[in-house]
Length: 384
Image (cartoon, rainbow, N blue to C red; front, side, top):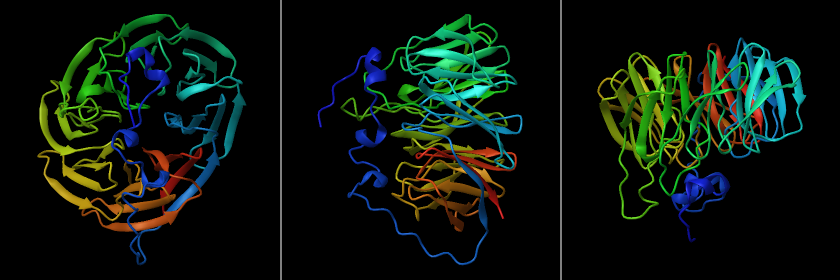
């Protein structure tokens, strides 16, 4: 396969997926190089349940992770549909369709939904009806959900620009741009807010930055991993999943790079270990948990970076990033199985088959885990 270097302006039309760049598709897409590891038989273990599961619509390509706000779950789909459910019961609260394409997921405040359009605009829509309140032009398509930080809504576009807009009227408040490498991984979600105080941003070339949401000022930018190799493809080292903040640390993982943690105030690197992931990570008070691109799940001590355990029983099964569920770690695979792993030693502790195909992402809720699958199903997962 011949790859042509891309100008930043062409990225929206020809983003290169990680599975193509690594030379083998995921097992779910028919790879014969690495057949999925057969599932080991489990004796009676911890029960895991699907509290509810609903169809959200077409979410092909990722970037449409549902949004949890005020006890409800909100979701958008590519065809302009909006759904809102009670998080606890899955009961439908409202739905509407604006009959225009959305480019990625949404965020919301009490009365307004913010979402990118397929033709490169940021839309502010009335939460109750979908009626447009304002729209603002973007410099490119926004493949991930905008984020709301108080009076500012923040969007990142395919050309690498991050822009802040006034929540009330869509007036541009600030804009930040950086030079992009010639080749990039598809990035459908690597921004994360810490309250209204900090915006964590995973970037190309193995870098992590923290911005001030109100002004766009860069508080710090640090290298988690450095590009290596003789070719442009070998040198792709992008952070394409969300950095995570907790207790003075910002932790992240890069494709063909490293996983590690940085000091949240200064950006200085505390530790890093060689690992490639486009699946993401999660933290608890002691450990960092991450899914590598081969499907193995690993745990590291947050203070020292010491590897605590490695679970290889799910390799090549198109495994999602991890989420915390009680005292366990939850992942999903490409066949729709949900797997519980012990946070202490990584052993497989529970399993259930869902009505979905391969999870795009899992996020921890106050009383469960929210899942989005590639066939457009939104589900809430609980213990027991």
